[in-house]
Image (cartoon, rainbow, N blue to C red):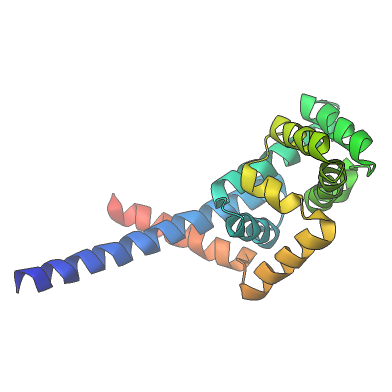
Length: 185
């Protein structure tokens, strides 16, 4: 009986931890979306794609934030070293990464460049890896981008089919997170 009660308690605790984790993750996604001006669905789609390649949502969110911040800074006259790195990647790969086209298109253009560089052979693979690390891409996102824009879109379409969080979802989880915090106080 004691083992059964422990299993019920542990199972209930696991379910609570799962719901709490899910609530916090979706609330964070909503805050990130509002902070960088990229839709929650778009970020969540890329996070799902990164997970398929062994990454995690937090690292993908950091990549979105880093690139989005560099683009926002460029538009107001703050040129970060990342902009110079993206220019170098554009030159080496042959596809211009235009900061005015948004983060998703920039990732697709980055993908075209990294694939072109990678396809040059062993030296190209080393160069692509160096450039990817230089701009802060985690290995999972790097592997995804090496598929090229068509391959990336295929993975993103798959993730979208299985479901991504919407603004409404993240708003609801944000409100739930606030209520949970109030109850814990």
